[in-house]
Length: 346
Image 1 (cartoon, rainbow, N blue to C red):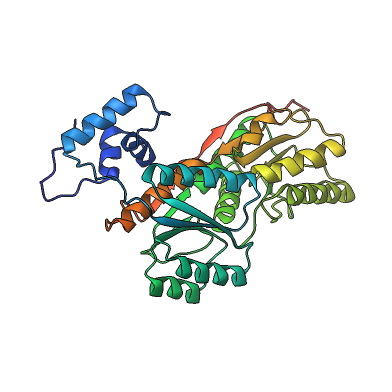
Image 2 (image 1 turned 90 degrees about the vertical axis):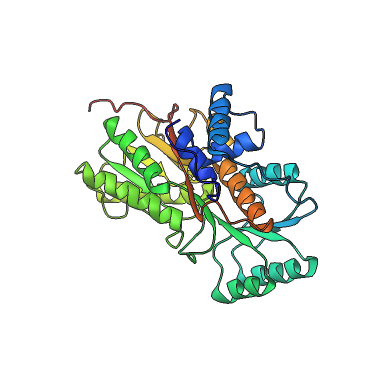
């Protein structure tokens, strides 16, 4: 142990334990809640640090709480991972979850807030396009605590948020393709107004610039996080290259796995082999990424862990305790599979 035991008046936080144990905050949370997906050595090390720092385990969460989970949509693979992460934590806490979908429409968000008020929900986890100042004011008036998961735009400094290292993830994906010998790389970006898609596009551009590689005009098209958009933008890239008499990209980095699935379809329809003709990288590491042919190289965004941390944070607030951290970003990780390979020398 390197840290001195804090003064009795100092509140020991999960961040302090994580730093001393050399693990992430989410790993400490898993130890506290008896999760089985961590090694015995890690569990023992974290528990030793908690004992050394004098961490006092809190009593069980207040049972019977009703938590609203509000998403843009419920029928995507991405949403399923979020639901799983929240449900696991709330089930352990004896709390109930109410699911709502707003489909990006402000009218549906207003209706959800009315329903929240009617059922006297104890808190909310919001995974929505954005909240207007009026909606934030309404939530404050209802005194309903909420946590933003993967926030779209800038948020109030006092609102707890949970996200991922999107910029760093994009850098690792782009660097991977460059290291494989690719010099003509396109990026299928997400919506322009969404914070995470802007961060991924910025990470891509920064890495290409650092490697002194050009990004032709139109090679960072902004679309939606779905397969239809990925397919359409890939078709446009190929058509534009053909019309200009230029070589197409030798690699594509998609801002989501679903966009990558659409790119798969478009490339195969045009007769391109993956990864021999075009390398392909996604972002998210949804379960389906392992079952494409070839399996998809992607950036793992720990969606379930992000959702779990959002739920833990909200339960702390409901119990009258401060959030351990207002800004929490979980690390992303490049997962290399068969959709990328070293570029053959022309």
